[in-house]
Amino acid sequence: MDATLPSAQTSRYEQMLDWLKRLAIADTLQFDTIAPASSDASFRQYYRIATTGQPLIIMDAPPHQENNAAFVDITRRLAAVELNVPDIVATDIEQGFMLLSDLGQNNYYHAIQQGLSNAELQALYRSAIQSLVQLQTADHQGLSVYDAPRMLDELSLFEQWYVNQYCNTSFSDAERNSLTQCFELLVADNVSVAQVLVHRDFHSPNLMMPTDASLKPGIIDYQDAVIGPITYDIASMVMDARHTWEEDQQLDWAIRYWQAAIHAKLPVSTDFAEFHRSYEWMSVQRNLRILGVFARLSIRDNKDQYLAHIPRVCAYLRMVVSRYEELSPIRKLLDRLEGRVTVLGVTL
Image (cartoon, rainbow, N blue to C red; front, side, top):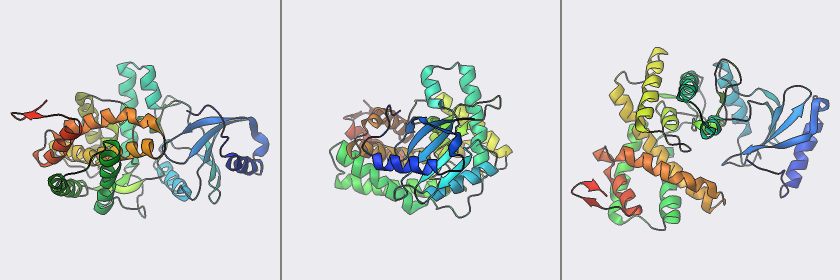
């Protein structure tokens, strides 16, 4: 959460104010109340502004760095399947400014950190599961495809930023050969499942706390949605990079999602064991990418707060790759990076 209004980007901020003042609803906006709402791992900034009615969110998304047309497009697709997404009050695609309805100040991550009873937690996540099923019924025609070449390209972030830069090492020739084969096998499996609209970050920071009795979470940060594996978003949710979920909880939510998906006639495997293996393999690709992204955010962008999540992501990775022999090259690399040794088949 940012504490102050921007000083280094004054011209951009003044440009935003000028846009707001020219809107038809400008006389309802209380400009002296503008305050930072949040920022994220992208170049977007968010501000909250009071009005004579409900507060609104101003999104500042520099057009040369963010795809604003995609945000508008995906918002409409998700609203069409009755998901709780922001209403778009006003837009200027060329300048990169939007005025949105306010879905509240608290997300699932904040609520979890503040403390929830188990009953409250389960109610929230069962509602999130239903929202995920709805999301996967949305129109995905024309979106970019999250295909094998793109996944393999993303895995290069793991090597470049996590292994080379963060861990200050490199693959040996033997590791590179085994990991290349392993990554190709992993990605081939990931893209073999049914394709739906994929949020890409369906986890606690992007699920806003419900504001009414429906318990429907607000869905945000979906502008990078793609056509991709149906296993991706459930892997994101149950292996949340911001909060650790133990394996029994992961399984409970995954089973509930799987049952809801079958009921909604989504194209998931009717064999839960196969579905479980598929989303776990999907999680490996995602978590390797995340390690590269978090390392890059720290090293390149000076956002060191993301380093706190690296041990959790590594633990999720190790949990999965340790039980599939085909993924053992990844486990062996993690052992080396973490200074672990294996004795009689047991990693110490």
